[in-house]
Image (cartoon, rainbow, N blue to C red; front, top):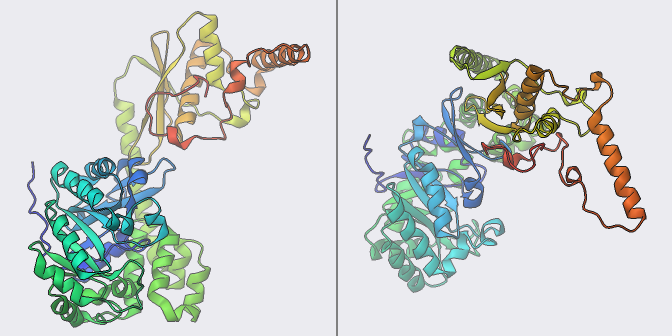
Length: 497
């Protein structure tokens, strides 16, 4: 086991957690310019618990992917020893579950206790926790005892200095490694002066590192101002939000780079790590600020893709070159995986290169239905589907077992349901059994349904209350993909679904 030096929170310049800003490109850029520690944007515990950890071999990242295949959190080796994962949580057990999920990929875990926005407070998270010290203690104590990485929290100040200091002393007893303090009350906004005196009182009252935050408006305009703010608060470290959002080269001892150069550096990371264009666009707009009405600002505002953003900043060649390299790498990895898959000696599985195309079948009729019908007719147990997902491209492959024989397609599909249908096709074709395609002529399953529907209508007309046929209760429409199923290995629900 590799033992890493615990993250130190003294004498550090830190990128603050910022919603929509603190994604991977901004974190890496801040590190390049001199930041010692970077916090990711606040991510909600419930959303993270739905995610699956996926190693992205093309981007060389670790992705936490939601059931709808959106990447919720992406990180890489470059930041592993200096990125702190901030979560929004109001439940100790959920917080611990998320911390365990990401622990091996980050340097520390932080609980947001200062965000005053409704999306955070309405769930009892963020600044809402400040009025529930017992819950704060429960969450932090559970995390400190449950994981090996350092735990921190970020708070806002309370109405009185005394109450704030008492709360922080109680927080210190949980065993956390440091506390970040935004020197404003939860109802105050950036235009209100930061209360350096309160941060200083906290720094003098506790022994753990205090990280001062909130100085962008009043203090921090250039690198030297960071130390001025630290001294004014007597804090161990300084956390920078908006000043870094406007120009992350604020962390450079030698002075900031021109904004154009900073934005181009940001775009390079955004392309290299396949950042969603809407997030890239948002962050660039925060940097442009008053320049949004310029020709370049208008081009950025009109951009509807990463490629168009690159064109707006005269980086079209970089985009083409980088995406070509990534695509070539993806193709190479896919070929390697396919070669390895083909070489696997698997005599127990009958394989065939097929895909399910719903256009070739009547509405609501699928190969899985035909296979189930055949198994019932032949007195076999119903088919059992085992589905796996490939980390590289998140495609699916399914193996169906029928009468102790396994079948699968050699082609990988974009969804669990499509992979299962392909496996069913392989089985049906091997057995020489009809699979329900339009070209096969009269479809007995459709006729069966029509008879059942007619019986149902006749019985209803005669006042008989009969149970609905099972196929009426199931949704066989392949267009409606239940994304929550994607990461379940066994087939769920009705065997024809």
